[in-house]
Length: 285
Image (cartoon, rainbow, N blue to C red; front, top):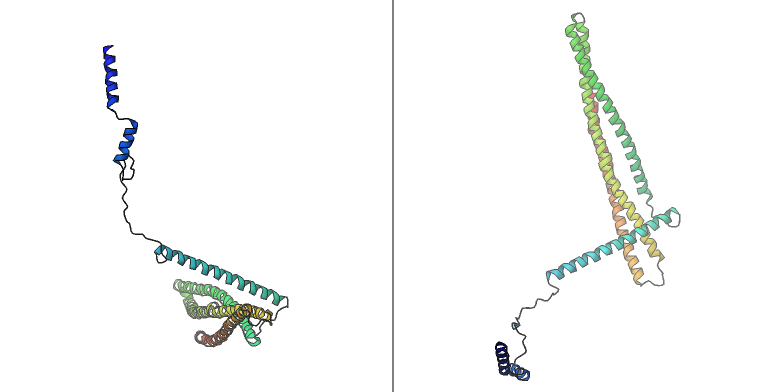
């Protein structure tokens, strides 16, 4: 009992020594007057001045983005131009087949082109037959060589017929020798005709295909220019059609000249290349 009374008295003494709420609030307010309020256990924030790095147009990232944007725009324009050109050429081909559009015709050049294609077909047939003949004749030469060896072996084992077997063996050896020379000439001829058909003529035909494509494009843009309204000669559509027509006309004329020159060189090459293998073939006969 005495202990509890002593404890209550000590608590009352502690409460007397403690300031009231108003006094503590005024003490806190007066102690922090003139300074900003700062929560306990917090550190003051310092304003570190860091240099600003704004994303300008000269930064690498922006430069890369602008480059990618330009590349994308150029690809879109390329696809757009290709689509328009393909549509015009397809329409031109269909109208030509239906007889509703006139095509540019160079009668002399087209006759030479058709003759060149016919010449290539004939040369390819000759090449196929020569290869078959060379393969079969190679087997014949191999058989003659084996036959010469067999006659020579019989000449040694049959003294009573040695002269006849020896004569036959020498005959087969001579035939084998001439046959090998003929095979060499045939292989040279096959190589020359193969180069002429599959490389030289093919290169000229590739230029001819480019020329024919340019002719279709030229006619397609010519039809576009003719279909523009004559009462609006200075309209943007007319100027664009005139520009496209001039460009494709220049390309068409350039490829037509290239085809004429290549066909002339091809004819000269064909006449010159036939002489070596003919002389070699004559030497074997």
